[in-house]
Length: 143
Image (cartoon, rainbow, N blue to C red; front, top):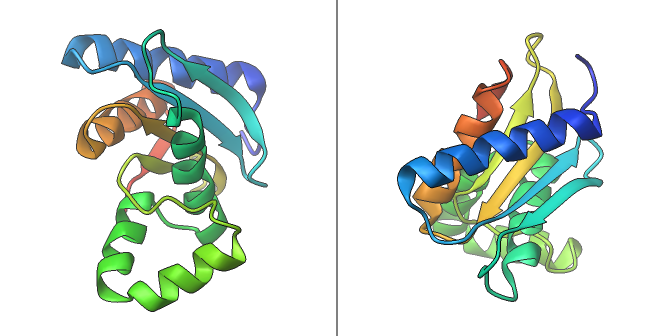
């Protein structure tokens, strides 16, 4: 697989929601983007708060735009706050440097997209993202 299809994006989302139920998370919002940063799927569970779609997209978009997970971006924000602030200015505020944004790689290690999840603690969001990606035999690159 060299590209991410809508059906694959929806399957990743379904599996992330299965993980969410197993972990008893708060209501999640899940965004799946292709390698060009274009939104393929956005699912917001009942009860998810108002800004969750933008946060989920920002986690995924930052990951695919900069080629590293939002967890790594969060570490960068701690170590190089001026750089991340400048990048986020260039990105018009679309980068959310907090765990929950994971690159999706194929078996050839090519980035084919990213998933971003928001709604619970960032570490839990990330766990659901990883499990959703791995359930399809793809590689979840969380950094």
